[in-house]
Structure formats: structure tokens, C-alpha cells
Length: 220
Image (cartoon, rainbow, N blue to C red; front, side, top):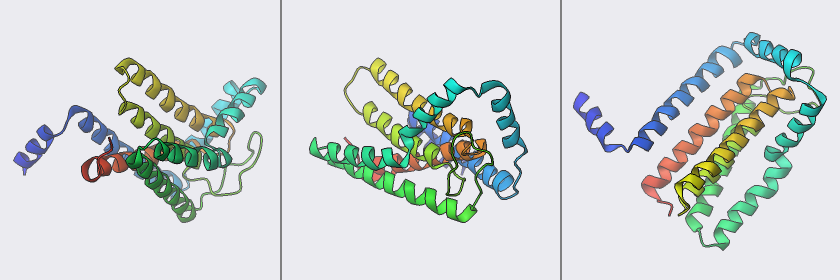
């Protein structure tokens, strides 16, 4: 058994090994949040973070900025941007990437809504600007922004751009996803645990899809 794991480890590339470690950590954190926070209804840490935001971060200028940032993963934006991405990839004859985008996005949405209906976690009280009507866990904005912008970062990695530009573009896209998640906490439409769980879910799903496609349906 030990020999098998040694052989498996040496067969992995360094990047895949690091990604696999993050995948395992993401699943562990997601499970911890589901079990200890959502199912046990333990909101103490979430409410503590909200209080820090109220005392030190909330202000009118930041509120306007956070509202604008959160739109980059809103339902109206996704309904336009995602089909445009899929169609654009197909038009430029990146058929496998287009198919990958469709399957990854559709599967991600099903998982998000399925988990919302399963956990039925109510939204936080006293939102900053507006109230949301659906369930709170996991954050759809956080989950899907990580799927969408993480996928775009992966596509950029597959290009022939110089590595420095790849790293810059990937950093910008992943940072945008993280800031979108931050905006959901700031606007108090999601608990911090909803957002962290959403990031973990988004990363895990994207990792699985990239791994599956690289193994059985390679993207060029």
C-alpha cells in the first residue's frame, strides 16, 4: 500500500499535487462548515465578523463600491456573460473549452441550488442595502464567481502568453472572485461561513472538472 502511494505521488506533476492538496483542504473546510456551523446553527463567529465590519469597515463610499463589485457575479450578469463566453469559445473553434464551460457552469449551478434547498439556511438579518429572498448557504455569488473566473484563469493558462502575463491575469481574476465574496459579507447578505463554504465548493468542483477533462477529454 505504501509503495502504491509512493508510485502515485511520483507520477503526479508538482502543480497537480499542489492542486490536489488544496482540493482536500477545501473539502475538509466545506465539511467542517456544513457540520459545525450550518447544521449546528452556530453563528457566533459569523456574528463576530459582522460586528467587526460594522465597527471598522462599513462606510458610504465602500458600500457603493461593494454594491458595484457584487454585480460581477449577480444573476443578471451571469445570464449574459456565461452564454457569451460559451458561444465565443465555440465561434473561435475552441469546441472542447466551450463544452467544458457549459458542463462546469451547469453542474455548478445545480450543486449550488441543490445545497441551498437541502440546508435551507436563512439569510442574515439587517442587510446593509437590500434583502435576498433565497437561502443563504452556500453563497451562490462566491461559488459561481470562483467557478467562472477560475475557469477563465485556467483558459488563460492554456494560451501561449508569456508566463508573467498569465500570472498577472490569473491573479486579477482570482482576486476579483475573492473581492466578490468579500462584498457579500460586507453587504450582509451572506454569513462569512456561506462565502468561505462557497469558495471551497467552487474550487472543489472546478478542480474535479479540470481533472476529469484532462484525463478523458483533454482541452487544447
